[in-house]
Length: 229
Image (cartoon, rainbow, N blue to C red; front, side, top):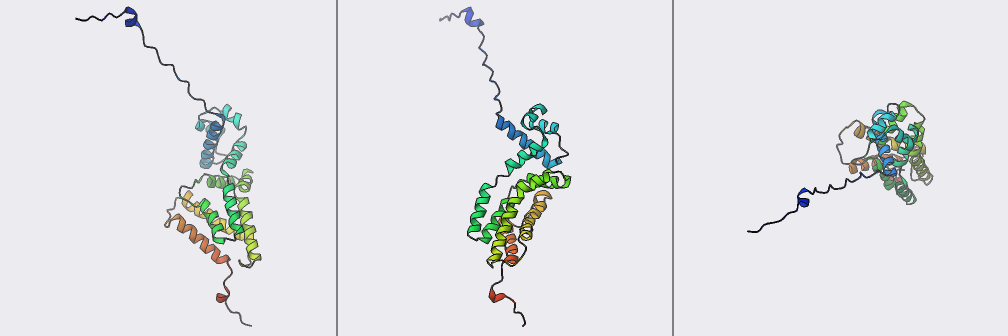
């Protein structure tokens, strides 16, 4: 018979408790991004005037004091939202390249497909609508950062194509506004009001571009109506 001798020390020894891990601290940029995301969602749902800093802080899981540390005013937070979501450098480069090539269909398709696409985030459109309806000064900030650049770029392109004889003589700025109006109206119907699309995104964009360019392009000489002398 084998006997195991176990000391009292081993019998009474307690297992060492694992050291508790400290929760990882959120970095400054991460915290800032969290605040911007929470504010964007609330502004888009309730408007600028209908959203309080208390609600933003609660949604982000922080105190108002910490919110004010990063953004001293709601205006500063609104500007940060626009700055984060108005990243258009790649789109602008692609549009300018299409303009150099005088690729009419390519240029208009680029502008339309950037906004009309599956999974498009309606947050910015809702912010635009709220800022306009509430009538605060931020609506001008929104337009300048979100739309003015491409309105002017498209109007300039249309003007150049008119000078070259490719487009009919129309008001370039009104034509640019009309095209962006198609895009905004589409998003209002489908992204805000929830109207189902009956065609694919690609087919829809191609149809919009075809219809619009059909009204801009000069008719070929063979199809121009004869005028009586």
